[in-house]
Image 1 (cartoon, chains in turn purple, yellow):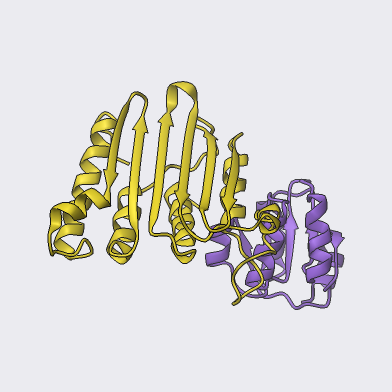
Image 2 (cartoon, one colour):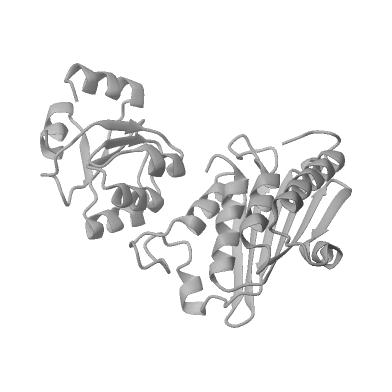
Length: 109
Length: 185
């Protein structure tokens, strides 16, 4: 599934979408950036409550397919600029990580 | 990072790569004042003013292997998420000083972690080339440690040798436990 298809299917909001044709492979959930760097895998979706620009750096480093900011948190302005420059997809939702992850699970993501 | 000692390791590794031969680490734990202060000072090559302006920008790095450098960025956000701050002062050719302040009792403050292992492992790998001054304060008690003083006692045994490192570990661990009222990390 591509990020674009995911957005349509789960009604996610696109905050930065420079690379929406990227394929998704798996999901990682976590808010401790060093742990995400160590444990998330290439093309994962990443569900988090962190919205600062370090998140974009981690997503770029691990080559994640998209970041999904949950619980209606907001990305910082410079995160959005950086994401557009570096080709990192930033999405958001009002849902909690667990609820969104359950929906992903039902769709076998 | 899950422990602040990992941030300290990251910073002293930067110091080592910048050619420092003396690194001073000062940790002050002041629970009654709700303050945890970590200061790391080196005599390495220093950072230019231009680079210092962008030091917490994760997309600026001195690394050439990748375009992202997160060390300082993560340490700074760790401090800021605990109502604290991180400041860096540096002069080319003189050295760099990193100071991080945390609210001691903030719920999001990571534990200090295994500082004994952090320091003894660093000495085990670099003790011959790089000297460490380590000062740890807990309220009104403090512990000071200086590898230059230890080397002076060692004659021709290397500070990186296994038995010396084993002894250092115990020495640091016991002294920390003592100033912290017997509480281990």
